[in-house]
Length: 159
Image: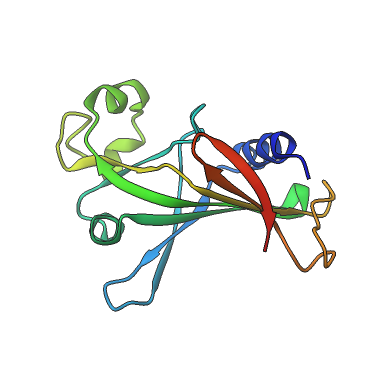
């Protein structure tokens, strides 16, 4: 499988759905999952999600430095999953640039509030599977295509 094709498809599949599931390691060692609304994936594959320091995902990311985002795409009969190192960042300029009235409900202090932060993922692993795009590595349908960040490039493998 061609890495460029898979990367293009991963970006498209994620862009087609407004929400994803974010999973972190819980304080008890289990898994915490929740619905998130990420921003569009940046050119360098960074994914930003506005959040608030009161959220458990912030504590869990600060403890482990990792998150996994799963985008279910029913139109492509598949999914794309991004995982890797994550951190919590204060970026007032980015908050101002993307702020909408809808953010006030969860972050009433506005974009200048230091409690309003971004969870930032820079994935080093992308997994995808799609029936409509024929991304069904051997054994067909029982594996997913995997892209691993190798320096600044990506190499293809499978699950």
